[in-house]
Image (tube, rainbow, N blue to C red; front, top):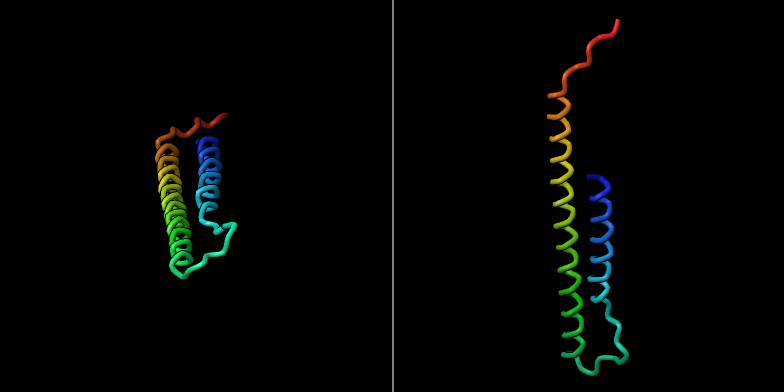
Length: 87
């Protein structure tokens, strides 16, 4: 399970970096009017905001999975039979 989570974490990190990279304001020309400048900034901020919410959702999911794995490990350990003493 840990190997699967590592692969999924890596893929998600690549996705979020690419997704939020779109929010960088890289234009070949300077905005000529205030309206154009505002539209560019607003669009960039919207992309970055969605990226932040995706990251928060991922952290919440990973926390829930971690707690589930810990709880599952405790129940499996408490149900295991103790080893017989060797003479």
